[in-house]
Image (cartoon, helix red, strand yellow):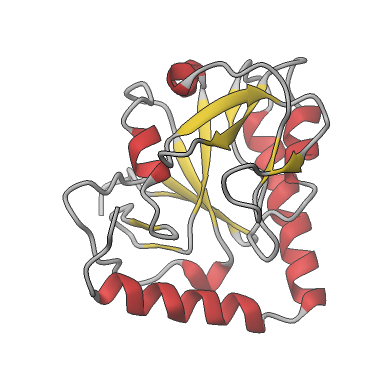
Length: 196
């Protein structure tokens, strides 16, 4: 998907620069707090869809293991990026390999469950660069999650993991953008479905 020049691109560049400038000790503390909070949120769930954060993304490298520890075996689904930029899903078993389509990604090996597997999740965690109070989410511009989120069952929480300063006043949107229903930061959970 080719993105036209927009406020999205400007905001994306700004958010990526801020992440790159975040001191490592601050990032490590925030990632540990996010992973622990995410683990508490999934307690009691049978199946959760999440992701393995790329370097510098909220949640850090420990996120998949933290989530898997709170779920039954095979209960954590992680994405595999397909050549058309859609997302297939694999049950996480403790191993990640370098992505085949985008090398910065870490993906689980194992049997592919299909693009529709996200519809079996009771909670969905998504990466984001920024989210606003309406649930508008700024991703990296590939459209993978906007496509995948069309398959999430109605009523299932879709939660973006963010650093606290990534909750912003406004995120530019386009018709294909899919909102999130909540945001989890090191400061806590923000329910974006609540009346304003």
